Image (cartoon, rainbow, N blue to C red; front, side):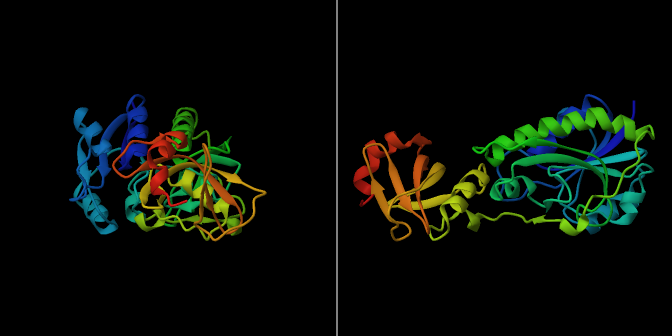
Length: 302
């Protein structure tokens, strides 16, 4: 059975590792350590420990170089999914078949740290997965293959991620053996001059700015699920907005203005209104707008 060294950290990486473990021998897992402030599970580490896979921890490129200076791995190929550290040429070249990255975009569109969220933010009608033999650049390596799927207009980053995990596993199953056997020669990415870039999201991105256009806010609400989410203060109620619809044809108002109707809560934006359809008040479970209005209408000041 072919052996691989796996690089990855988050839940997406864990899903890939679980799939690859069913097809290949995992010689080692290289992952980032648990942050001191993080109290939850680290899924890659947990999966590796459960299956007695040797596990190594690095936080930056220099530590990864040191790890490879001090360890002789025998695998012909490495696999990287959601790792977050750009690797040196020395580490890449230590694998005769290179290191293959499953990147969740249609490269060269959305290179970088958060391609799925940016796909939703941009209103892209297609998403996809690219299998790439990495080089020292930021998602600039040669492609083994890529495949697209349609993006639903109600897609969130969370729901799209699940679909792309399944697509990634399919591509690993169909194309990794063909690459390892020499049947496939990777090709340069098309139109590199058209590359676009995604950046790491931050908690500060979660605060809704009602001065933005309605379509921008609506996309952010979907793109920021499950993290960093979209937060707003409605009257005196702090809440996470989980779904909204754009409403056109109404008279404009000062951004952030609120109108309550029998079963609707409307908030003015720069150009149109948003009808909030579900939300999660601080300390409460997510609820549809009808339930929210029944309990909080008096706190909205509308």
